Amino acid sequence: MFLCALFSKVMAITLPLVMVLYDYVFLEGSCKAPAKKFFPPQITVKDKMIFFVLAAVFAAIGAAAAVPSFDGNFIASLFKNIYRAVFQYAFYIVKFFLPFKLSIVYPPAMESKTLFTILLPFFVLFWSWINIAAFKKSKKIFFGLMFYTITILPVLNIVPFGLEIPADRFTYIPYIGLFYCAANGISLINSKKSKAAAAAALCCIIVFFCFLSRERVNEWKDNITLFTKSIERYPTYIAYANRGAAYFEAKEYSLALEDEFKALDAGFSYDAIAHILIAFIYRETGKHEEALKEVNIGLDSASYDDAKNAYSLRADIYRSLSEHDKAVEDLRHLYDYYENTNYIFWETAAIYEEAGKYHLSVLEIEKLLELEPHNAEAKRHRTKLLNKIADGDYPIPEDAA
Image (tube, rainbow, N blue to C red; front, side):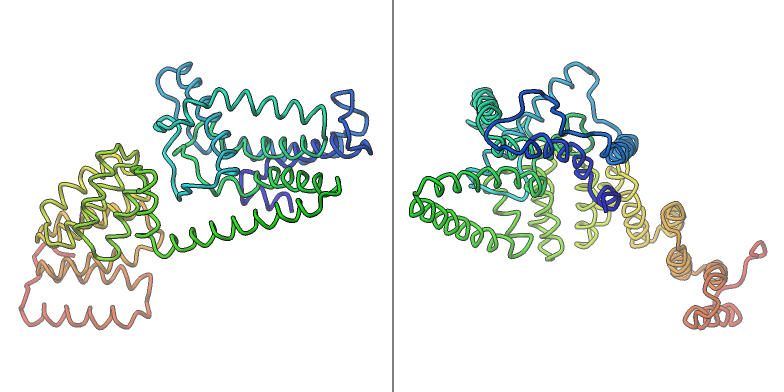
């Protein structure tokens, strides 16, 4: 089961540490104060060694598969990454206790300019004091706080890989620790014969979260509504780029274009995506020259998946401009991206037919039929093209195969 979890989510690597934490807190038999020794006898690491080994292997694989995004100055980047990790650690705690202005995307730590950023050092000192007090006074509270800390570590980007922004989805497991602390707080009130106060507090919390949940559900009506709300709270380039994509799907091309340019102006990290989407918009609105310019810019910095879409789009643009040879050349690039090349053969055959090069179109269909010998549509089209050639609609050049 643990192996399956490792294949699914990186956060699973924290399980061995949580198991050690559980032993440390709960196996002594008393919950009033932690053991005097840092590693009391009840903590056994030996029986958990297989979990540590598997976690280490998958952590190494994940690190090897990604390239850390350090800047040129390693020391400066390290301090920046530590600040980002501390900011996100504290940011999630604040959102737990004050779940207002929730958003599908938040601004990166280095771009956040709020009161919270100014108060961050004081918050860190306050939270450290709470952890030390819990360590001395209550094992259960200490367990909840450390559970949060351990399970949030993999997503704090101390060693950054890719896009480093806070996101609510990273807190689903870590928040279990904070909810555990809250539950113990209510239980403490109840144990002191203040059941009415405990019940009232619990009811208020439930009503409060029901109201917030209802408001959030309404925001998830569709992507346009979702990212519009996000922009109202945090006008980030990611929100603009995603709302632009949503407008594009809704065929609101002018609004889509406006949002994509705003994303670029705001410093969209993945600018290739924005330029390629702008090219799609121009293509749909018949502005082929502008589309060609944008897709060329996008291709300069496109990732593997984005380049696949860009080459396919540019081939279609060239086809619309009747530059058939260039369109075919871009389709040839797609051999590196598709295992199933049937689509490429079929599209190339169609382009050659539009250009009046029937013999080359027949050759592409022949390649397709080698992969799909029972493709009746391809056979019928090949016959149609051969009849055109036989009727003299297009004579076969002497050098044609």
